[in-house]
Image (tube, rainbow, N blue to C red; front, side, top):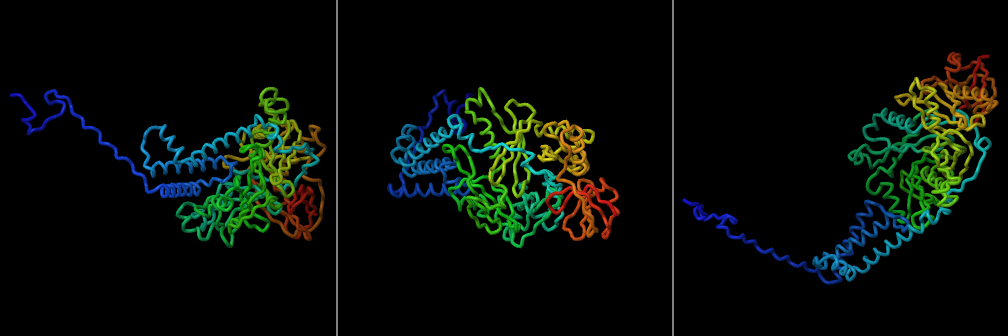
Length: 573
């Protein structure tokens, strides 16, 4: 008996029903969108939507209201787009193709539409006007560079002024110090900034704290961050400076006390470089916020013009065209290196940098800091564009004033010196820190701390810049310098070397202390009637361990500045 749809209770499957063609329902017509209110009401709604979008974006992204910032153009174009989209919705405009959208925007959104076009045109013209192809000379003049005499202008420094720590070692010491404090370790962490400054005549690194997580921020924010860290780069001592009133404005804060947001709402038109933490001579923490300007076209020739100083505790801020003398970090290392590269590449023209390459130089890979007087200088090697492993000299630039000197000195690059130092101790597998440039006996010298796998300083190395096969090492800085001086004399380079001339003083011991530095016990001896401590390692003079207060001694030492001087010998009389 044949089966039919009627035998299944009237169920019929379309497509199998006697071969009849399927019947599709016609599409449901779309309801036309209706305009909202009258034209004036629609304009107000569009402006309100645009303002809301703009406020949210401005609060989150913090673009400067400045034609010299690419972020401003993105912000302005977003506002134009927000208004146009809102106008399309509130006007009841029907989708009739791209051509009709364009006509609608010209008619109903004329102001934002043509403003967006104008902004694009201004940005393109400004970029072309600042192109290095047309303005190579202006770029090369961003950093005025003078020639200098290294031996005459860079003083030899005493051992108590030589930074022993690099950034990595300072970070480990800072984390370890915080871990020793039971009242802080669970609530706070150390921010990875560690700014190098001169503080009370000492090279130190400053590190701020941040809340461990969002919950810790919520429970501790009323009191602020209670302290900051000071890491002495010579003695390796870490001091936790507790504050009577906590730090409330940092780069790791949230909401209105976030430093970037605080700056933007107080200085909406300023362009800022990365803020750095410093402390004044009274120990008050400040954020140094360099103000950037574009000096070539709209977006080229970045330079610094003063800075805003923000009290990290109270949030009070002030712009200084000339910053106070205690400020060390105004020009960042990256900006200085960029400006020198412009100078080295383009001072003979743009096309010479591509083809003839006559007298074209660039900075080497890496840089370091050196304290001279009351300021911090950045130094980096200068090499030709040929890509060889030698320097033609090096650059010293004051980070506060941008005063720059080029010192002609053909020799090893920093990483070649690192390889030489590590090769001297290859059986111990120590790793060298990035070199510090010193004047030892009138000779430009790379100084490095040698660290083991645990990042502990075990030895020190000195490498002559001009003849980097001359490598001296020692368990202490004094021993390393003595070995280096002997090698210089043996090679006929210098008749003597040292961090200052030698002198002798006799007296009675008023105080004697000891500290373990880099695995070696160093003794500090002060004589009656003097405030100076004379430092000597027990490895260099074992008899120092039997000295005590009241002993009559004769001290031979290297002259220099500071409250701690390096002793060559301390003999009991």
